[in-house]
Length: 344
Image (cartoon, rainbow, N blue to C red):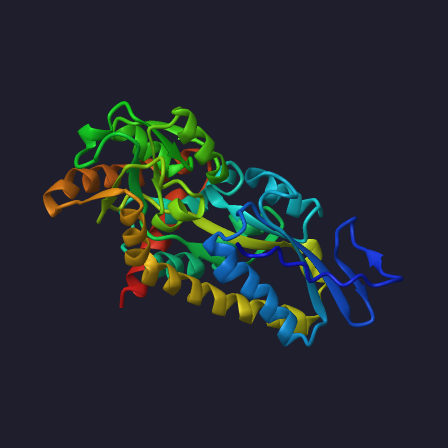
């Protein structure tokens, strides 16, 4: 269990910005960072905490952080709002949880889109800094991305039934992140149950879920292996975008040299994190298998019907956004172009 990192040094005589923990006095900047991950989760352990530590190091202790994990400042779906309103200075945003406010980011969560975390991360990070996403997603919500993580393609983890074909999931209540994953789940005949990851364990234990469309590592991080008896390998059933953002109000108060350090460390963490995820997939699956999860590796023939449905999902997702006046088709085109560049 990773101890909660508390690096906030109280500075006397400091002035608060908008009621947040951001305070500048002499050469000290104090920032609150909030997310929903439990202690020991792989994202804070390999991304969030190292990012904070490296920023503090490179600013010679000028920037300090107080870290609030495990939904201490608010539930996962509320963290964007809490960052916008100054409860936190930097917050974790699970894009599926805020698909009403940041729907374009679901482009990196479409099933069948990419084959590794690094492919997805590189492509999403490129468009996240582009004109379309800046204007319609981050800028529109008055936040700025510091580093992002796109998880590896999701797999099926179920309680009582092995999945080989779409027929196997018909009628199953599966945890979904919403957005494109809801569309996919309905198209394969499952019943999507939208919920944040921290709530999944209780739902599985009560039997109100029959399984999840979930990343391998998170099954371990949320201790779900005792409830999920079956898993797939080789599937490509969507993904998840996790971003850590800073509010525009806080960012504009930062000295230029601090902004530079945060940006550069964010680039490094983004690259490192996707490599960690891709490297660990096999190891995590071995641990889950040892804990009792029975895997089935999908054959090319078994993947075909899922792939066909995935193509329908992408078109339907983009069209739905276009009809709402959002540039869905445009961002899908940009993401696919970025994916193509990431593969070469």
